Image (cartoon, rainbow, N blue to C red; front, side):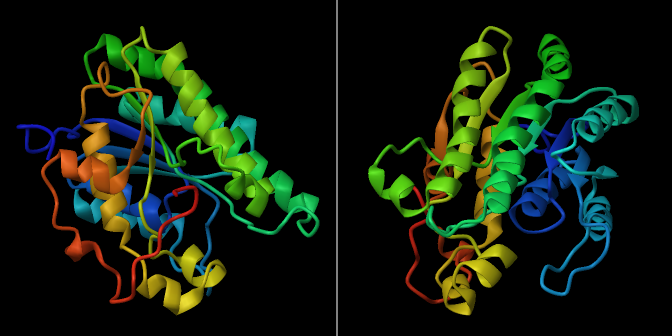
Length: 282
């Protein structure tokens, strides 16, 4: 889409938080089809009847698609585990070229109702986890830049929309997601002279995932969403863009695809319902 090289991610190494299902798995699959190396850091070691897919089924799917995979069973909230995942990735694949901050927890409860345990979970996974994985990967990403391997950090978080609507509707979740976005804003500036692209990507519409099905509206919402493939294809465009030029952006999936010449989005529809605008977009 964004390059004349048919497999620009061949031999490149991606480390991703989460990724055993849904959007993260779709992004990893798109990279795997190029022949990328992929480390997944995920907790889902055994099947869950409500959430199909484990880190092992994801790894097998990625390998079938053409990728080399390091499945790392661990918690993005655990400093030592994340550091170990980073070091194992470097030892196995020789470095890190892409960091994808995909792991995220969601609870849209208003402030008076939300349990502090849920508040802490969202802060620890969304905001702190993004900061931690990015921080620990910086030395390897700097090496990637020096080797001309086009390094990127991509975080799945929204534009920093300061309309009171969003904070007023679900303050705890908004703080956790905006913490991810602030990490993008800050690291893009901090690393701008290192040749590392740092960006966020967010979908225009809701995406048909298990979280949407189970937590955000059931079959009706899934029917009014787009498939994870639109997020994956947009992420692929960002990750194959020149890292020295594409940095500090809060991308929206359909805008990324339009700029890459993809304007027919009908194949991405999950159903025939009226598409629902995602959170944080007016």
